[in-house]
Amino acid sequence: MTRSCARPGCGEPAEATLAYEYAASTVWLDDLAPEAHPSLYDVCRRHADALTVPNGWQLVDQREQAIAS
Image (tube, rainbow, N blue to C red; front, side, top):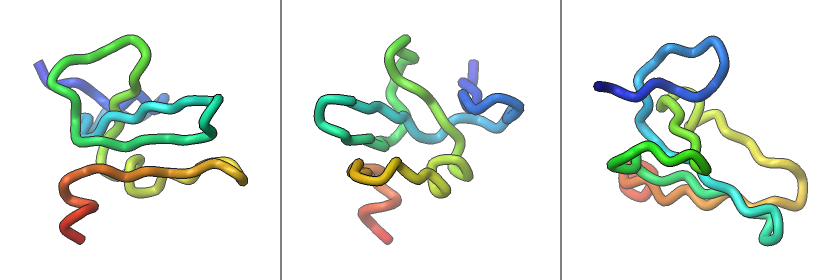
């Protein structure tokens, strides 16, 4: 079964997994994790590509496609 984007109202297939750590003020985007996990968020490519983080936070995009670009 294909996992869907976690964003409300979006039914697109998930292509990336998002994680965050408040203490480090960091958000990570990785290629889609092999399995769903309750503390991670799966998002579609559109939402992953458009992701912004709060001022003072760092976005670490570790997706294979992002590294190749």
